[in-house]
Length: 79
Image 1 (cartoon, rainbow, N blue to C red):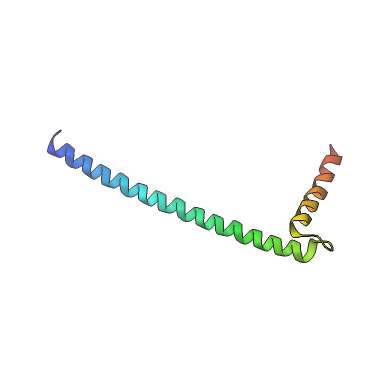
Image 2: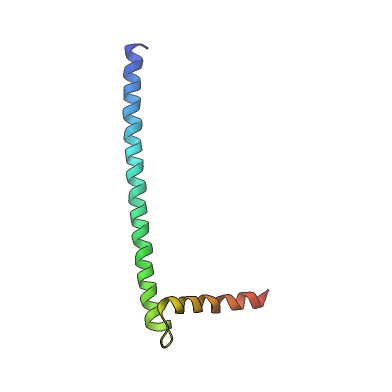
């Protein structure tokens, strides 16, 4: 391999490595934002269910399960 080809290969490797680092940083950043958004939504959802949709002595998880069953019933009755 000539010196010119070696130099081109070195430059190519550096550019590809740089793009890979940028890609990794962008994906990692997106995943952190996504996880924060989902986590924040779940906290708000749990507080809303706890404050407005639970019945006496019912936990948030139990209320969510009950609501899911109640929501599924009309769908089953239509079919």
